[in-house]
Image (cartoon, rainbow, N blue to C red):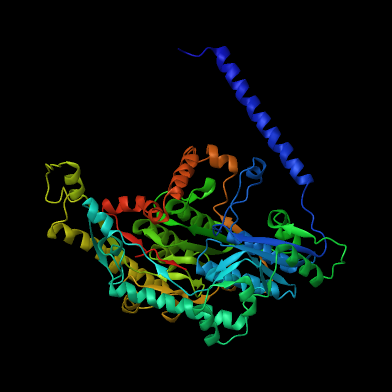
Length: 600
């Protein structure tokens, strides 16, 4: 039934009134928030929680805060707080509350460097842990002092690398896996075709463990004034209670949090009757870097590329969803930054184990254009491997932490063959086709030799005609030299520097400094970091706008992620990569890490 003119008019008026009311509510809330802006008392202690997933970047929208939407703390935000505290005369000390952050070893290195930089101010930084293992302790030893409650446990018991293999499960289901790949170390399919590491995979894992173990032993030795031999003996005798850890001089005190506060009062010269003035990270975020003389000057674009590489738009991780790198989103951000005359250089922050080879190449192409316009520097996070390295290689300089996982220059095409599962379920398939390879994507039978050759040619083409030559061009080396260190092999940042795959060590801050140098900007002047693409406002992320599709799916994506998180950890990884496996089944070439290792 057609709507009457009166009904339409009332509907329009109602919509306008709702919009006006919503804007008024937001305006009032913003005004209240502005009136209640945080003020920092003199000689305060800034308390920073080092916990949670700590993604590289998460937009901080005041509107979301008004609606009570919890926004994830990011690594870049945490590092900014330390940078501000270093120059803020009102901050007398920093207390790091370390609670099992879900970060890799690259980010742990970056956080340690930021703590070390803060200490150059001469102001103390204490670390407090209720419990900790290798990574937590590695971060904590960068502080001046470490404390744990008397009943806390410290597990610095060495390194173990866990990789999961699913062949046994697939055999029970009647599912086989087949693939073609280039590079003897490109062992993605081992997860589905073996029950343990191949000799090549085992070689890589042992090399990574040796590198990490030596680095941690060296760091503990230097921080706690012990010989490497003493540290190795301590590791072999772990675990430690807080009391025994103090006896071994691994921590500075087995104290409760209030006792640590009392020690800070003494260190900062408080009177006995005074209460310790503490400032939380949320409150300190209200203090802008610009108000402290930071983040001001010539503009440098920072583009964050975190997650699995896919075609299309990126997922920003809002509403608890996983972050992804969409080729359309990143390509547009790179081009916009390249064409913006106010931007003097571009820093690409990559934290990805790869994904779609096609999507990686599309971003590489846009970076090739941007390189002709201004300097491009890549900063690697925990991981920048396979497709992540593909896009990083097209930079003027690459900066990574010694513990960053990188390399994995290789390609793979593979798929599950589920004919046995169909047979078990009583399902039969009949293909009637025209054309020699018309049934090449059938899922119930393995490839014929001729079909396998089709996919092998595709893999060879991407590796020999694209991946290796483009890395060689980006690194200023020959194809032969790159192939020698490629073949799908994974390297740590320290190993990659020896092999010429990165230029120097450091995190995002160092990458910005390198970008300044390449853009001939004064070394003694700060720069303004501008995030591309600009974060979408909170309401737009829900309702859509401009050229974006309405993201009704955002809440749905969060629900999917919640379901995945509720699964056993062993199954979570499989579901995270489900979309990629679907692409593999369609014959798409993948540039992705061979194994997802969990190193503890």
